[in-house]
Image (cartoon, rainbow, N blue to C red):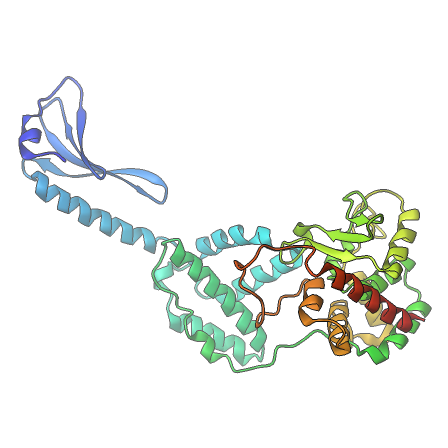
Length: 382
């Protein structure tokens, strides 16, 4: 740090020059003999300079206080300059690569747009709890309680991100969830096991493409998510016939962790039949009109609807059926069943830091589980 004696002794030169005082503050000496205090600082990633006064009118001790006060003021304005829209975009850009499906990404964007539409362009610190609660009340009034819950959860995540990033000090979403009445989360429609023989009888008799029928059978046999199944490829090497394993890569999984699916004899045979009739090494389940793409999830769902199960069964229902039937059998531990279908029970899951993820955990039990369940499904098909 400079002293008044040092600043006073600085002589003019042919060109302007400066001497640093510290923390971005310096004294600039001009050829005319004038001496000016200059503060250099960064705001929103940009380097900026500000003249704060002249020496000797403003001495060393006084200018440091002026500089500190000015930086505090600028810092406050910087926070105010962060608008909700730009923070939403930043949060979305950071988080979206972790999400496994385009449909989910679109859903998140829609929900964020929905809850923020009345205050999206405002600075963060101008958004009040009243504004957030008013929007939530509006959504609740329409009877869409689950939508209100999910929208508020996303907005809360954005504000927590903003606080962690230093953009704001407050989160107007706090306690707003108290305005949403208690409600039962709506589960996916799912047929009971007793009705599955009739389901497969209708499937065999309907005029759907054979490949679509295979998709529905595999979805039932394996309990995998329909997106994980439909995006399977031959050239990825994920179907390992030698070791009787289907290794679903992490980038296709909802939780971004690869999943090993034991190939039961029935599943092995279905995949082998497809392998022998493949046209290339791309997607296993091709789009009928655009074979370079995979089949869409709407295709098997449409078959379910046409067969008379529009409000009784969906493709995700096969996962519910798998979990329910296996748990009710009392033959397998619940954690083994959940692990196999990559399902996390939020009330019982272990701390993420407690152990390293092991894709082969419970493997012998999972092989037994998949073989047992395939035998059960085979009874329904026959």
